[in-house]
Length: 81
Image 1 (cartoon, rainbow, N blue to C red):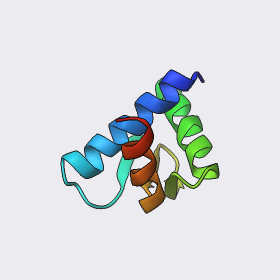
Image 2 (cartoon, helix red, strand yellow):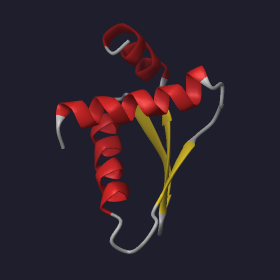
Image 3 (cartoon, one colour):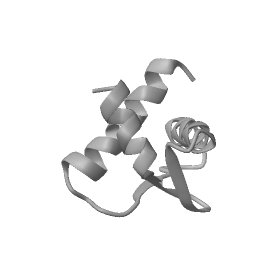
Image 4 (cartoon, rainbow, N blue to C red):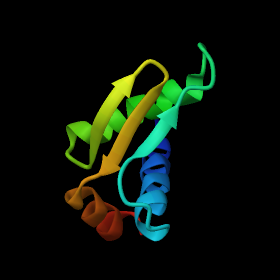
């Protein structure tokens, strides 16, 4: 995963939660058994979770719930916008 893809995914989550005002968790959903984009986004969110930027709220077969932490919102606003 490239730095650009990691930042793009984080900005998409920020847009969903903050700009669109959707409180709560965003859901990543797998579209098929070989959905590479889903697995790449989950890997990216796990990367950000290790840094305290996002919180993974739950995972099950075919979906993952993620949300920005307060630190994550500050990180996006101070470094990516």
